[in-house]
Length: 390
Image 1 (spheres, rainbow, N blue to C red):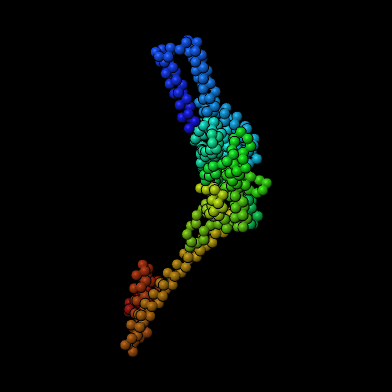
Image 2: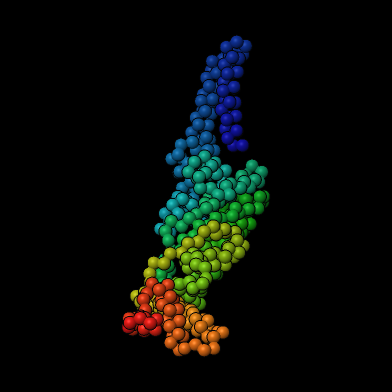
């Protein structure tokens, strides 16, 4: 609206000048003194419009927009700093993003200055919310980025149930839901202290960052803060072997322990953060420090597990050999008994020499099937029984 009014003012100035010039030249024939006064008034009007009214409505140059932004921020953030408001252009801590976050309460002039800046449109989340009261226009703008990946990992040290100290790094990717302040507020003026209802709207937008009564965090810090607390709770209730133990024999290989732990923490925090208006998109854990005692313990566990596996494999191999030997021995005994049964069945008067000869021949056949030969003594005995010379 203000931009259309600015364009209309310039068009009106040109139209008035054109009509006045035509009227003076052809029909009006006004005295030159009056025309000079009118021309001077138009020049002053143009100077006022160009140098005063136009920059006030919407500064065109980037440095003018920056001046308006810094001047307005210097005033408004002095009032709202107690609520945790952060200006995107002010110096910030190393853990905060380079652009945003911030909550601004501003008049139409400053809102247009911000709206015309490409850099602010890039980081604006919910955007501008206009509040109108007659000719007075106030804008409530939320410059918190909708998606903020933590630039630096957050280090944390926790202890397991058996007393081992482990170092972790936490990375979170969060998104902030658009805030919806009241669309209409009465009796507002951006040049004085904000009305209680506006202050409550800003406090409601920042309520998600309240940790306790005496401490507040920005919304992008809250997810990492709760993740640290939940990580300490999860690690404190488990032993080191429960976290990083090997899979048991006969079971499927589980997910990496840190990924599994991160999924459990994320499932726990998602409902709580959603109620606060924060969406936790990703949570990653990295192990940075393991004490020497835990490393030695892990090596001993691995050594004992592999020794048990090797002993089991050797035992299985030995049992297979013993089983094959028992099978061969049983087969030989069965063949021997079968040979004796064939010799003795149906024959009442057989000499012992004939029985022994038949047994040796059957034994020789079984041995030759295995690729071996009878001992020399048994061969001499078989030859003797057959009637040959020993």
